[in-house]
Length: 296
Image 1 (cartoon, rainbow, N blue to C red):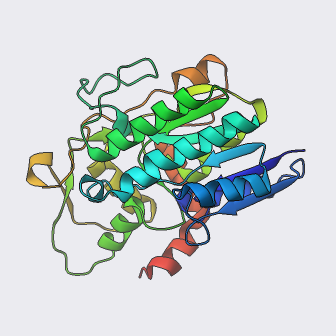
Image 2 (cartoon, one colour):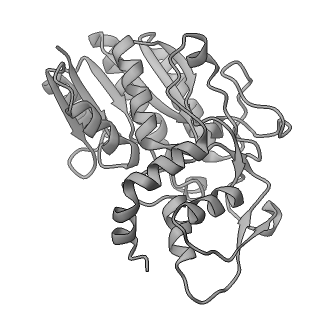
């Protein structure tokens, strides 16, 4: 029997992890915490909580993911570097297993679009968000060996805001105005619920090391937007555009396609094709999406 602590439990992935782990009878206890109850980037608060609860396993879903805001907001580094530093330091001292969620943004995305990124590829982030997440990975590896780092990308789920929900709301807009969606950045849309299942697989088997964890296949943001609307049987006025037509503060990788090589080598990959995952997600949550987004 083990005690599991999930940080960022109010977020998109953290909430799915909490629901999944809380339903398991073989765990002694599952605690999910998030701001404002506790600020894990405050070292004293973090260590006081950990010393009080003493988890055997920590799943760190806490992160600052507002990519453009990261360019100027120092809270980005507090969340993406300080928290992994504190959690891994405590875990090392107390023989706890740490599962940490990272990102495709540790890569520069300059590979050709017929190639994928594996866990062996050189990292080279091109944004402050990517740099903060990479340094979070590095400090974990410096502080301890009993860890798993999962890099994911293009995450969507039912909790909070995400690209899928935004596209559905835009599709429901009745003004018929054309909406430009970037068509030259590619990745693998990934369900947070499936990622939670992959995290559970890592937990159950205590899989250590760095892993890529995304759905199979690839598409552009435009392709993904159209697929979201199509699965909901909604019309859309999306039109494809190039990255240079859509100004952002932070540079995005053009190629964010991750290959789950390390999970596949040990036959532990939970993911299927992104289109199938999207179809399953919409099928399961259609009524909730209509209600939450007030879709007509």
